Length: 136
Image (cartoon, rainbow, N blue to C red; front, side, top):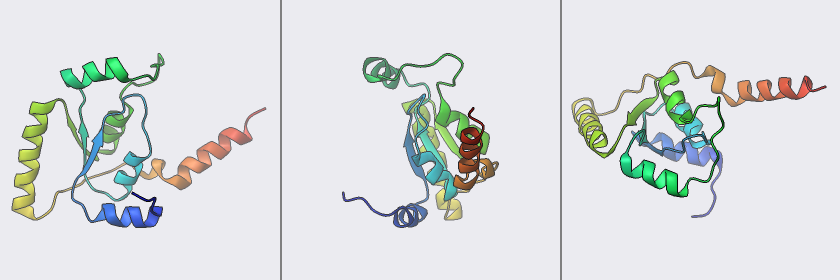
């Protein structure tokens, strides 16, 4: 697929009811911030799936750093109340059934995202600028 502008991407994402995000463990990525910004619930797969962890151990080449969370996406979803974290495949099925029933009942999925102001591009740019300014 050809690259599209960020505005067009956000517009396309905005027309969806649930955002799927695959666990990147110690890497937070940027997709999660787009999902949070459009205030659609996020469904993170998986936090603790045996098969996913086996694949992580076999193919995940990023060295985990002591003292830094190894579940950054999960932490952000919990902090901002922006979605659901499927522990494994069986939990995913339960969540999907619950979300489907909510959608059938209400015609939409509720998203009660909060505490997102500090993650805005403007605020994150200010934090970076302050770090750069304070380098001796």
